[in-house]
Length: 399
Image (cartoon, rainbow, N blue to C red; front, side):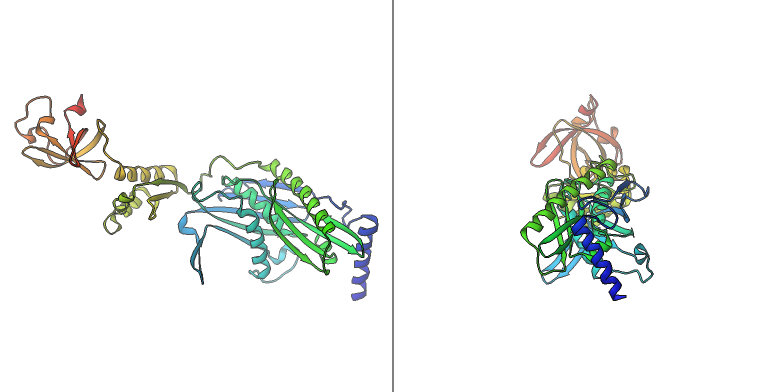
């Protein structure tokens, strides 16, 4: 059996070096046929199917809130990661049986794809979502990690994530005997097994975002490296062009099943107002709107909701709580307390102002209760400020 393997290795390597013939008949720089589809799973936030030859990945993107960030405890303290990429390589993808689990290989391939994609992700300030990508390899014959990179880029764009540039990856191989060498683009599993190098290159049309090399010989020359990188660039550009046929840029908005998120910055003095005593106010916002609300120490309030109506309701409640009374503007208010000299009216959710008895109506008012009583809903106009107190008018609001 060992002798047969040696004969096989010798035939394959010699045919590539001398005749430039590969196992499947391709040229040295040729990439296998590529097929891309997006939106294949209607319920998920973003999905893609990437097939290159006999290698295939189904990739899904899930968008979450800051509560979904991965928490990592290390010697440096607690860290949070908003981008997670999980790579699964079940035995059936190569026609085998066995236990499905996560080992060093899965972690390594996932980290390589994670690094390739990370630089193209939008900042948290411009797109406040947490990202989780899962790549399921359904078939494999050569570089499923690079298929994961391509599928991840498409799935992110399908989910409406405004990535800076699409990202693709390709695996390069090498056959070297003495001074003769051949660099292979998009290697097969057997070319990886029988060859001298597995060199993975991922990046955008403008540059490389991640590299990884397995090498079985003592070293490679500058000439080999230069040739490998040049072929990898050509192959990457070709793959990106094929991906662009399915989806050239990110969708304009996130999908209908994606949580709707929005940020608003409030004055630091208003943080306590939004949270309320013992968190009562923020709990009320959550209960009434159905949205998740998060406030940080800088006054950035993030609202995540299952739909736009829920998000808009929560945002309006927050804006009402933190809004400042504006001169000559009319508000809806509620009479909270009656005094001999006027009525105190609550408006903007938390703001109180005084309507003097002379500003109740367009006629002389003998008693405040002749015009309003506690609990009445009224329209009031802001007519002035007096040492931090707001002066209101019902009379002028009706003009």
